[in-house]
Length: 103
Ligand SMILES: [Zn+2]
Image 1 (tube, rainbow, N blue to C red):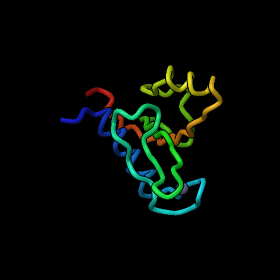
Image 2: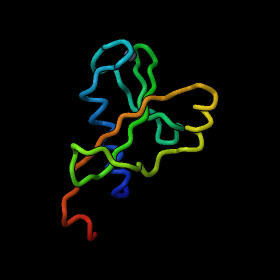
Image 3: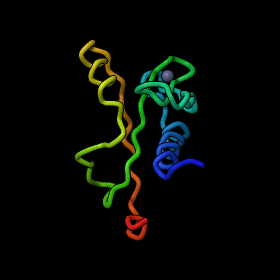
Image 4: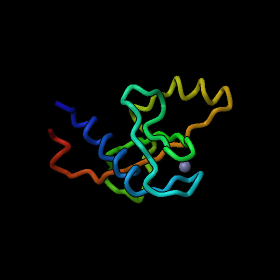
């Protein structure tokens, strides 16, 4: 059974896949989900090969960017950045339901 964190991650990935056009080729509905163990990327455009990572997080106010994002594979990300390879990150905030904080 998927954990709450996995459910949140999958929700964000599917939201971007279904609603965001590819920023490189501008086509819609071309994002496909990558396998879960693919490092630093969650989506690929099946037209142009654009790769993107999606980080979903729970927030109290979706209009304020969170200061930290947990669960990003920062070491591989840093190694790529040191090699001048940048994977764009979609940040998908989900409003935190007050009662859910005590689960
Ligand atoms: Zn594309």
